[in-house]
Image (tube, rainbow, N blue to C red):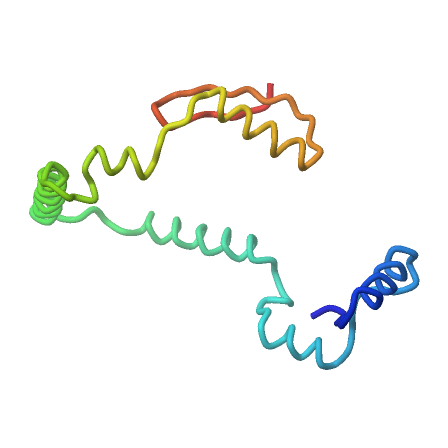
Length: 147
């Protein structure tokens, strides 16, 4: 999709031309055909606008749906409860992928100081000097907001 180089000198010469403003983005019919083949949604509303429209339609449709009958609600509650109890029981079986030990290994916790350090590194790389406030609300859940 961009310029091709076969040795360092070609790369350096092209980068110099780009940085000097003598050379712009790579163009051509072949590149345009590749873009058209692999990149959808180039025309029309942005993806975020389309998602908002779809979510609004879903919300409108949900408002028109009546509540299920009591029997169906009880059956759904019963199935969900049975599944939750079964999953909880299986978590205590040896070798379970839902055991507390395995989950702790899979998702290790982080201290507020470690998280603050990681955020500071991201901000440094991005050149962002926004003052942030970090508050832990659960074992592995934090709120990060502006001061």
